[in-house]
Length: 595
Image (cartoon, rainbow, N blue to C red; front, side, top):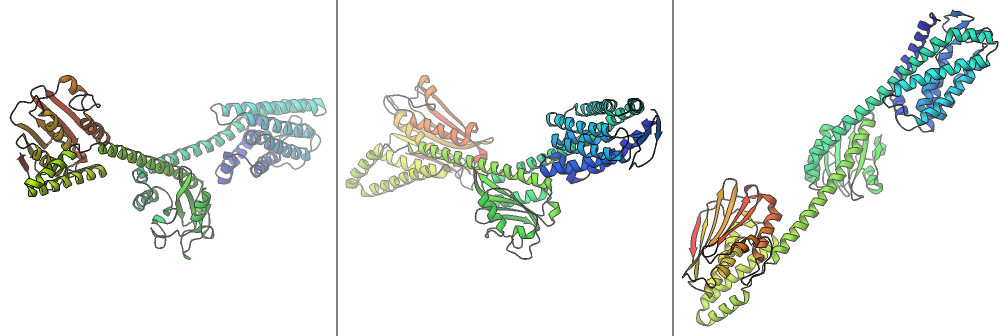
């Protein structure tokens, strides 16, 4: 019995070497890695059946209690039996392939063992078939990738080998000869087959761990590429964003060329074949048309399958992924290869992942665009609420001047034109230069001062270089209008009201300030102004609310809106805007008072 152990270990080593060599073959790795179809199962039956046959041939001949280390056995006499590792291949096949594979391998190994002869041939043939069926049933219910899979597989193999010993004692004749055989071979075969199954399953687990590591690396690469291309795809599917994205994808994949298209034309092509895959020209391959029509990933392994319109195109393989927005195919992402062998399973999985990620990015970009459009629409709706309430008064004033001072009436008509042109421009733009807003203020003042001459004066103090600062329209004009309408109304008893409008830079912000020396506002009302429209005899506060609302919509928390006022001491409104939203131009100082 002891002398049999090293011989059995040698046989197990031979099979483990075969198993290792198989594990290096891509076809075998694919076979055990994915769901088994009929062809895969047939191949597994053949492969593990061959393990059983080889185990029978290289078994160790046992005659009585004598051990014969003959290398190959093709025929045994009626007094002989063999100690082998047949159960190893049967159990592994059943655990990996399920009932069909286990049963097939068990039958092949058992029938072959029966043909070799010997007094235990029937018992060994039956035990191999039973072990195959049981292994397949267990393999169907028990996954072999868990932390305890190796130990479980080894224990199960030991049980199957112990079952074979029991069948030999029960079936083989004469019983005393069978008992002697079991005494000699039971411990070495049970122990070595358990070790062999453990090592074989360790190799299988290594295959899966390598696949998982490879998938993790490809996932990391896909996410990295997606992160690099996100700023471009969020801008939509256009020539510029596609060009930048294609170059990034080409750099971080094994593709020889990368192309991105919309539904009508090539948007970008980077890499080999750029001489005839030209951006902004019509689609060059029929394969692209097919993907656009069907909306599924298509792999081409030859130039004929790509069907490029250029006869000498060097691209020999391609993976074409549809780019979708809300389930509608809007373009394609194409990975091209000059050698079809480079288009392996890893590149397929990477390409498929990139196609899905880019489709998601395009959807997010469209959602952001729709959100921006809605926000713009809301801002314009707020702007449209600001109407020149003094329209009829201005017309009446101009009408009266037509009889007494026609030249002044003409000038006021021009100012009225400027005022309404500014209103229209403000309703069409989110941001305008400060200079345009000041023109709006000046036009308004000209019309109001024609009605109430010498009642107040407005001083403008604009810091150098700030006239081209971009600010929301209807920012300063409503503040000046509020001061004139409300700050200087009764019971204001001063002879002259003064409104000061300032614009200056402070640290990283631009400060716009409108200040008057009018009658002021109560502290209770100040707390409400700018937060909501209020009910008041003097007004509703809608203008201030609109200004603050637009600040929030455009700048978020980067802008601030503040009202300071005391009864009898005037009112100050301070608006602070971030410099990162500023457009600068070379302008001069503006400091002027208007009466």
